[in-house]
Image (tube, rainbow, N blue to C red):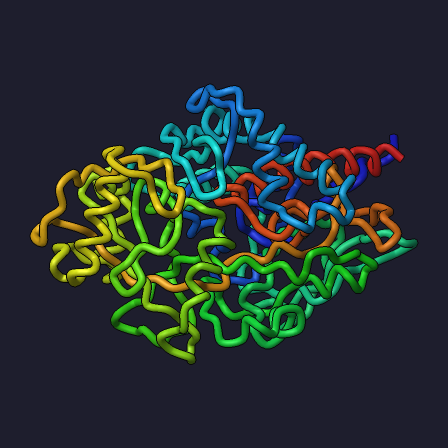
Length: 466
């Protein structure tokens, strides 16, 4: 009898939610995983996600939600008209598989996702998070990491940088990477790229595709984008010019000029919070991120370097109770404070009083807002308690990346799948178009990460049976 063939190891680049979702599927199918992470700690940007993950219908959100697909198409804007068939397939996969993604996390991984909120750009509530103190990104990443670390098939290596895809006979067969000590290594196996976007690549890809965003602060650590590694192997890029500037990144009073900002979760506005500029409301806070950002940037910035605005995010005590775990953390970090309306000036009192009348139904909102969630400040006075933080638009998410199929295969310029290579998460493009809905980044990671893992596992089985 011939000796058994050594088992093929799957290589995953990036340890955010997309990479961990892919690894979970591979381990469940008995395929060893080598996960390479360039950061010192795993989790990527996913671990910082604080608003939640979209899904519908679910046991927590039983509405027959036919609008999820159309909301995503509408959010994609003008981009939907190019590569329309491919985009519609990706969006259909994203929304159709959202129910299964929530069930997998909540039932199989036992993660609390029982609270459902309305986010900007959504027509119905569908963004899930837990009821406790732990933010959803941290809760999900921690649960998946703990599960994976319990398996002898899982090997995680941090502080290593992938420098090249290895190819043979027109297929990807592994990667080269540099370890923390500077040594170069080659590792063989099929590859899933889940390395994130290029929002922190200010001097490289971001400067090339969106020079108009020069000077904007960012929520991303400064590091090069990895899309060029994939284009060297023939991958096609799409939507690289579409960069999401999130309307609310906190301006830390202790380091207001820092270009790296901490995100003010969209759930704060979704649960009823309002935005004031010079003491006055100026926008429907539940508009799509792009529209809220544009409403802010229509005014002159308060500083040029970094380029930022002085916008006040204001919550009453009802919104605070609904978002207590977030706000308490922000207060601990010095990013929000508990105060009274009089501290915000006379214009703020007038704006908040008018907003309270709108919430009561006494008048219509000038900006078209119809959902107010937990705002309960009925008759504001100068001494009414509010929770306030200074926010500004920040480079947050890059919609562009390498084109993938509905099976998460990385596609070449001719639309052909590159053998041995899959992609998931922010390194890919085509799913969100010109604007991403809040809550869909974590969903994209789970849906296409799991698909990439499934497809890679099948590829490994087929290779071993040859």
